[in-house]
Length: 222
Image 1 (spheres, rainbow, N blue to C red):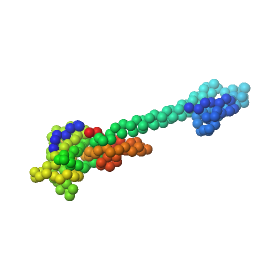
Image 2: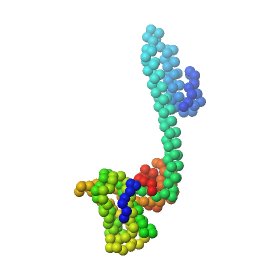
Image 3: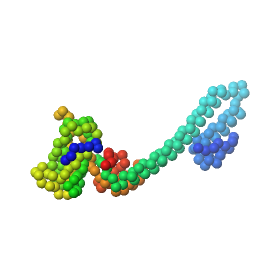
Image 4: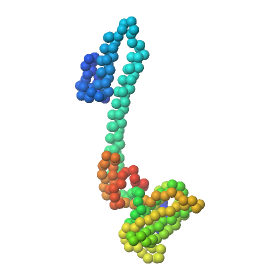
């Protein structure tokens, strides 16, 4: 086993609405048309001896502009999200044929080599990696010293603790880490080959040799 490496609508004139606002009665433009019609009617029918306060008109205009601004902002955000999703999918396709580290505890031994990984919340002065065979028997144990925090990888050459050679196939492993005798939180990571990409509503899904995983679950590309 080797030392781990850190690895917007237009406004119509008074008393009418534009085509875009009439097509969507709930749009900000339609709301603005209704507001202007009501404001004109209110001004025409106000009491000459008690006219509307200019500040009230200003406040109402500011409020309607805020509504329209929010709708425009929402539209812009939707466009940006669409562009981001497309960019993310294009980036994901570049991973096809590459190995990635994701949550898991499996090791695939091929041609005398198997690679796994783990993450440490903090640095550890001792990390023990235990490899288990298909029947649950421990076949190899290795202790690593002075390992940094973050994502790490390790390699197993297939040799057992008794000096024998393990057969090619699937194995599992577990990691225990401590620092000055105190437990360090760790997570096991499996390596998998990306065979294809599926676009889902939540973002790209990577189809790997270890199963389907979402884009955000990839810890490291090897």
